[in-house]
Image (cartoon, rainbow, N blue to C red; front, top):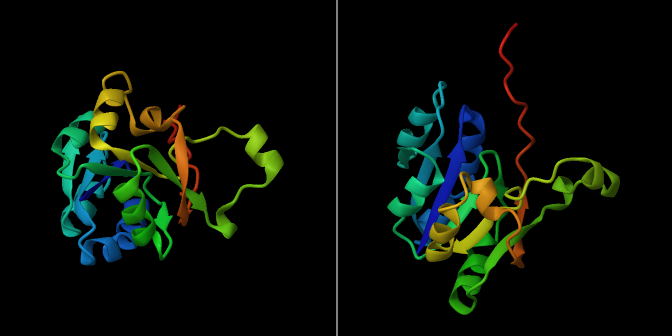
Length: 174
């Protein structure tokens, strides 16, 4: 019923944390498949995905969307962790809604007001539950999962997420 897509690059530890939070959904039969969309990792990201039983694709989020088996997609950042109770909220949403949805941030994961104003807002930080056909249409003009999530009207789910810490871009030595 639900395909999980995680777009990543060189974040094996974050990927492992996110995959661990999805185990309950797989056991309950809600998570049909997990697709790791790798954008050029040079670490052990592929190995982490393979050991967890995920499908690993290269070529960006559009390739992952085409490979997804579910009618609904759950897009997550590597390092994000879903809080217990997310399964019921997602099942209820997908049964009666057609619009996309995001998770609420867990209390310890909420950013202070001023920090939210002055920091870059990551559109995918709260995750995204979206119909596959809607994501596929958005992927035609969006080059990443973040771009798909940006500017999208969504509903808030009655479930929480621990947001992935912001990634520091790796700088090449000069």
